[in-house]
Image 1 (tube, rainbow, N blue to C red):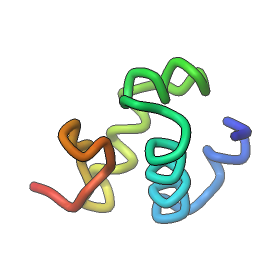
Image 2: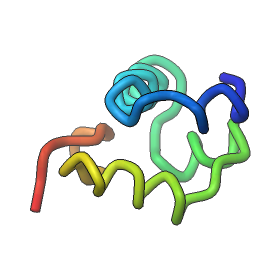
Image 3: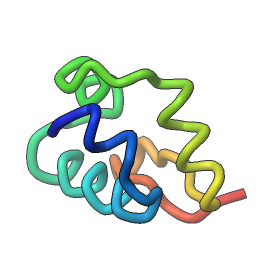
Image 4: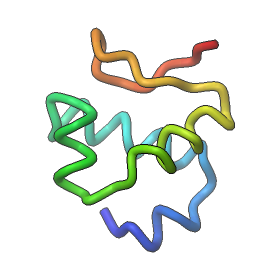
Amino acid sequence: MDKTLLERMDNHMVLSILNEKLRLECDSLTALLSRYELDSGRLMARMSQIGYRYDPGSNQFKPGA
């Protein structure tokens, strides 16, 4: 996953990629952030912009408050 490309993508595309990586490669958000050297604050802000939050129970981003 190319960080530069990810930064230019639409938030909904990023959501799809993140959930796929969480499902297939990473057992937690922490593992995903570490593996791909992503900034937690920026990532969470982007997901919040489209109404999604990380759910640790299902290990995916879901619609939320």
